[in-house]
Image (cartoon, rainbow, N blue to C red):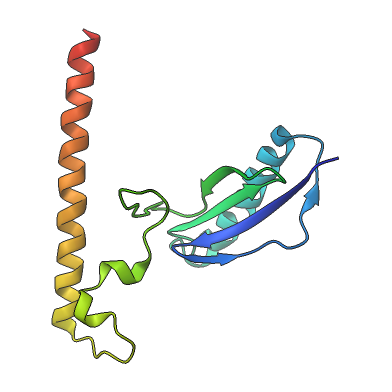
Length: 138
């Protein structure tokens, strides 16, 4: 019986499942992943609904990752053009990423504005592509 591993991921931080679970199929692993997410998210809704925001559950087997599901909402993850999650440090101004660098509120504010600006540009591009897709389907 194949062994499946259920890892928790937040940005570039990963909590590895070193034991895994023996399940009969990928379908069973998919069902188990959704049960885990319901359990984790359900418990957090009673306390803090944002507790798992940005966290993902990754399911792997001996071949590689085959399932990745958001646990909390919003399920926001920045992905650079090359793929894979963007390290949080890549979002900061380059002069602020050195160890021991002092970040002021203005530095963080500018970094946040830059991220929002990039996200809005990507959203506009997505809307344009979806509209073009709709036109082509008519």
